[in-house]
Structure formats: C-alpha cells, structure tokens
Length: 357
Image (cartoon, rainbow, N blue to C red):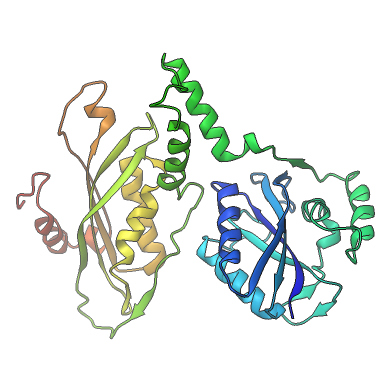
C-alpha cells in the first residue's frame, strides 16, 4: 500500500538549491518512492541560537511503500551522501530532511515521531507544506491557522523567485560581465555561455561551505613499533585562486605515518585532494588543509605534504611568467622532528623539475 508522506528539506551551506535538488533526485530514483509534488523554494530564518546563513527550504509530497523506519534510514543515507554533519544542534548543514506527516497517522517509536514534534512550530515547514496539500489533507486547517499565528512571531520566510536561485544568479552575472567587457551575450557563440558557466561553477566549487572531508573509510592493521611511511604522489588537482578567480593546478604529494595501526583507503587520499581544491582558495591554504584533514581523520604520527602548481594569475596576467612552478611544503608530527624520515619523503618526490634532491 502506498502511503502519502510530507517531507521537509532544508539547506544553508554551499549551493543550497543544488543540494536540495540532488536530494529530491535521489529520492525519486528509489523504486519504492514516487515524487508527487514539490513546493516552491523559500528562504527562511534559522532557528536556535547559532549564528548562521539563512536556509532554503521546500516541502515534498511523496508516495511510498516503505515503512517509516525504512524511509528514515534512506533519508539518513542521502544526508550522509550529501555531506550532512551533526556537530552542532540546530547548526548549519548541507542538507536536512525530516518526515513531517504520514497521512493522518500518529507514530511514536524510539527513532521517529510523526507528525514531527516541531512541525507546528516552524514556518519553514508549514508554509511550503500548505502549498502542496489540498483542503482535504487531515491537518490542513491546523496548518493554516498556525501559519497565521507564527507570522506574528520572529520567524521570517520569503518565497525565492526563480531568477534569484543560485544558478540563475550566476547566469545573470555572467551576462552582465559579457556586456561590461564589450561583448554581446546574445550573439550565437555566447548565448549558451551563462548556462555553461553556471553548471561549471556548480562542479568546480562543489566543496564551498564544507569544512570537513567525510568521503573516506578507515582500516585497522596490526600495530607495530616501526610504522612505515605511506605515500601517494603525483595526485593531479585543479583549483581556483580566490584573488583573481583564475585557475591554478598541479600535483600534490602526501605521506603519513600511521598510529595505532589506523590507515585510510589509498583511493580516498586523491578524493581528499579533490575536496580541498573544489573551492576558492590559495595554494598555501590548500596545503595546510590537506594536513589538517589528514590529522583530523587519522590522528597519525605525522603528515607530509608537497604541492607543486602553476598559476594562471602569474602566467596570463601581471608578470606573465609562463611555466613557472610554485611549491608549498608542510610537515607535522614526526616529519618535523625526524630529519631522516623527512629527507626520505623529500628524496622520493624530487625538486620542482622532478630531479632527486
């Protein structure tokens, strides 16, 4: 039997609309879930006493053959996939999905209460929900009355017009830039450029607003008194400089010495490099971020990172020095104190021209 369910989705980190759209797509791809109707996007004030960015919220009406517990499990998996963290109660998040109503049912288990216990206290839940239900919905009149009451409180909610959503904002800005440099955004070669740039930005800035890398898996190995250095080198990356919004790219070389037998899957280290590079930044900060993330995830005996890159802001403008390379180096733990270990790492990398030091 298909049950009619109302979900509330919210995001206030990075490209808020994109995270919500990804979540809706993931729900819709599940054979046990049928997307019936989605509300408009609303920008809403955050609740709690945490200073943070405004949220984008929608309500989603679905039909599902899942049990409430099974649907909740799937929701948590989607939140995790989209980098949801739960470090701060009422804190910022890339995605928050809650089950608000399950038809006219009242459900109370250890993990789930339906209707959601905060449903009638939040404008960001009630206003989008009212837009996708009919007067026959069991809680329709209660929702409508509560909205009138909460609008007198300190909560704010504003309909997000289509042209103000992130992708449309980028497209409009690119059109203005093309006009400002003296070109015609409507000529055949440029007419699709704003759309292309907006989609590109969504990809190359996919880590904006995210503090911690979460896409990893740790393994435990037999602990020894003589842990060996683990190294992955020549990891290609691409990033964008925050000073001129021009590309810099190159290779990262990363090593660590495990502690307590804890190691990370080797494929996750290049993914970590992708994570720290998919946002506006500087090479120096990128190098520091890799060390910080490795220390946070693994707590190893030490981490060593070398980043070699070329900068278009150096080669294409200003001094215009083509093929110049910038190297940044950062050590922590035993790599700072053990000269022999440090030299072994450096010799395995070579100088900026690939020669052994």
